[in-house]
Image (cartoon, rainbow, N blue to C red; front, side):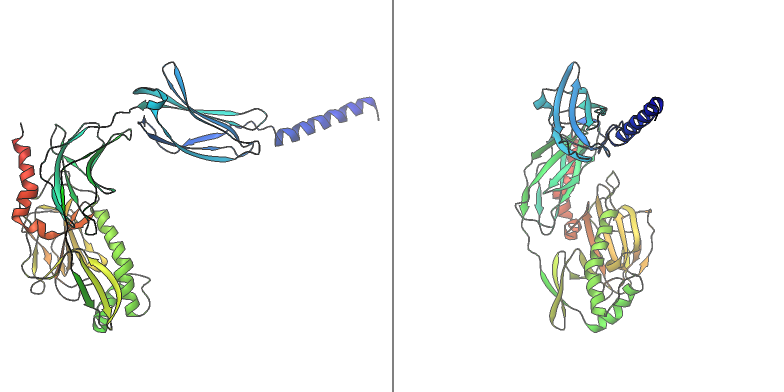
Length: 438
């Protein structure tokens, strides 16, 4: 072999080995950083979540900084072993005050380096506003008496930076509605039928940066007991009613008792989720006036009756009745209980043909088991307008009206809203102070 050929072969070998090394170790692609949130503000205890990926060499080092003016503060850093990690999801809280940062503009900087020969680095920068001051809230109304399963109204003030505000009942937020340009708000809230007299209730407000203010206000929770009821399910009832459901819903095979149990359990849950969805948005102004109309007739079942269903004398199911059942003559003309907007008029499973009226400020009335609709969704109605006729559609054994009142997404006792004195003492007296305020 000539010397020249030998040199050429060595050069080819070197280039080949260099190519192999480059393909295996010569990673020139930097890691990828993805923020999991649209971050515009950093509040006093801001959760930061992001993903770092490097699918070749693996992640070596991650650092999080905040630059404000000439100052650079390290928030956190993470070193990873040589074995490497290709994917790292990070979540932690940033506390600007403990870092010595001030309210104002700043830059969030996240950098990541890989394990390659070149130490490839990616840097993500995001302009943010540091805001560590929570919004301001203050109570204006005085008397707040609420029963288990009942309703109440609070009048309060919230500063302009309060993006979300209202009454917190346990973990459930009942959002408020502005009623003036001075920051005054009203919030209707409810205590579920299964709440306790020790349920925490407070006002809360949250701004765009996630800062939250909470204050307590004077209130009294009245305990209330609900009736236990037993319902006998006969073969005649099953034979008459179950075809209505098998004709409308797929997957309801089996004998009539099995169908009834799926309807009474799973379909009931689905129907109540639909009601919550319908009631998730409300007209921003109060539409109702005075006490709500009650249909004439005898009451057959009460709000929050704890029902035990019996078949051949044995318990087969338990549910809670979320309204008041009233029976009159068959296909009795049904009036709108108060002014509002029809937001639902359709078939609704166990409730049958159902109408839901939005009365504004997240207060709704519900009319179920109807035989006929006289209104469509989207129309405005006045108190006393004929909206339909009673019937026995859905899981109804006979012709009657199932009437419900819903505050935000929580069923409450309708009897309060039929009571002129209760409405005056607990609702309108507070609203009248808004007209007379200086």
